[in-house]
Image (tube, rainbow, N blue to C red; front, side, top):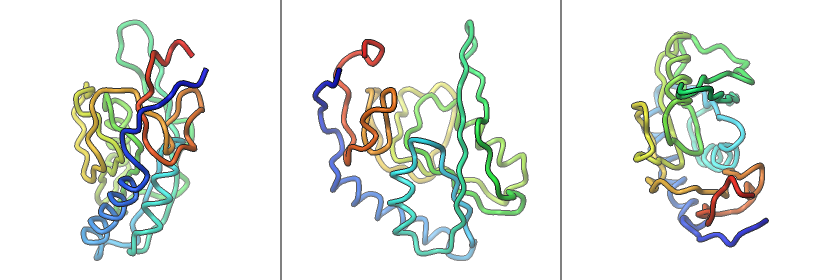
Length: 178
C-alpha cells in the first residue's frame, strides 16, 4: 500500500547540495587523480550519478554491494555480495553512499579498503542519520544531517519501491506493515 510522503529534502535542495559536494571533492582531490569512486549498491546510484556529473577531477568508478545478516543478539555480519573489480592498493578511494545510519556496514567497508592498501579512504554520504549510529563512522562529505526517521526516494527504497522519486521523503507509517 502506498502512503503519502512528507517531502524532507526537495529535488532543488538535493541538486544544490550535490553541486556543493562536487566542488569540495574537486578541491580536495585536484592532485590525487584519478579518484576511485565506489558506489554502494543499490541506493547510492542516483546520488552517485548526479554527483559525478558535476565532479571535474578525473575519476574511475566501480560498485560494491553488501548485505547485513542479523542473528540472535549480534549487531549483524556484513557480507560482500558484489566486490569491486578494480585494484585498490595505492589509490585514493571515495566511498559514495546514500545514507549512514548505524554505521555497521560502512565501518566494515572502510576498514576493508584500508586493509587492501588504499592510499586514502573517505566517505561521501547524501544523508547522515547520526543519532542512529551504533559504531563510530566519520562522514567526510555529508549532504544532509537527518533525524532518525525512515526515508525513501532518490535511490532509497522500501522493498524496492520509491527509489525513483526525485526528492527525499519521510515514510509515514511502519515499514514492516507494507
